[in-house]
Length: 333
Length: 262
Image (cartoon, rainbow over the protein chains, first blue to last red):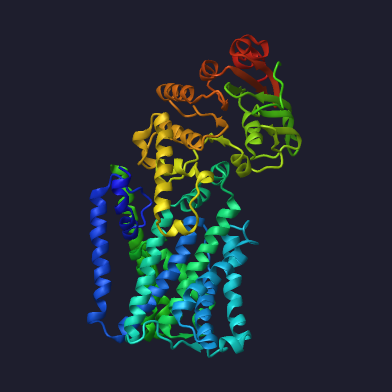
């Protein structure tokens, strides 16, 4: 029974990061499977009809979606909120830029290194903060986001100061820039979603969920709470830095402007909009919201914050309306 | 008391005292739990049962006295380290993770025995699949042992408290611990569910298992336990077989309440 549903597991978790088990719901899984296939097919085919600017924007969406995913993973598995994840995103982005400028390495080599560095930075931050939670941890992460621009400007020789750095190297030589930006970011995002779906069923993933929901019970089963907190923060920071690497690659530039305090807040906004979902559609929705809405509102001038706020409220309400409907129908059942 | 503590695989509390601020919760409690014997711990509300239980499982640190298990001193160890020594416990208020199915909740009980590393947490490998299948088999057999295998794939929110309680016990036994501590397993269960629980616990008993049950339900304790300890106001007022306890004047006065101050 378990094994026959095994192959649906990946698909359905990718389609909907459901908190329900897989078995015994094959009707729903079929539908999710089809929906996901349609979404992936659609995303694969977009470059056939879309122009350069749309492809560029969508590649940024996917990179931001991955950054949103890193915040959502922290919320779902750690029960914690970070408003400073832009620090780890910037770390990944600058790693890619600096490695290209100093060593001439392309993103193929530098992205894994960026992710690993992000993990190390996450660990270094999480270890002393392992007993902080809730608002205290959020404020501590805020310190990261606030310190970031100063650090970037301070190490001007390496980071290019205010002007930042350009990323010119291709990942796949011979393929047009917009196309490789689009497909590479989409592929990495998809792979991370699959990896997270696998993680949900792993002993480590389940241990983290238990540690979040029932810390005392988790400890009684040999799960150390500080281990759990450090692990999920490290993992989340590694994903954020990978997102930063993609962001640098897809925007071809890094500068302190793109990593202000507010970019950390927007990542959290994206995570809320995606309902902290860890699936591909949820991540894309969150990434699209924080990427496209500001872009399309850009010529509204002073009205931008108001329109953005209104859009945020509308999206959150609409998304939660879905939740409410499901809640009501669950109650009736 | 004929028990000779500090020998063999016993869970021993020796003159344990615990105070919260000025409130003395436990004073000089000594008890020795033998393997193969179902031991009960009873007492009225506020007697210190759960406090003693938490001292044994590591949630509270005792200030005075010693607790040891199979020769290991436990005072300095936290709950996770005690779990690694083979001590499992259940919780009075259900402590299942609502995001995990019953089977997955039980699987978490195997965390210390799992060997798959962080790489296979993200990338499926053949070895990881085999390990996962083996863990699921063990979890299913723990659920079957308690008679709730059919609930394996349901979420905790879809199940009645009796089943959840059994699921929690399944989670405690799945790692094949040397000692199981159950905190009021019958709390919130109806008569049928309590009967079911009792049979499950009887089936569970092994000659090498230390089993301690903290419980309000006197019938359950009297039927199930071979050795009973009675706490009142943080003091051990009686211990012995069910027959001894039933006739003990202090126990009778507590439970029948012929004593004016309640």
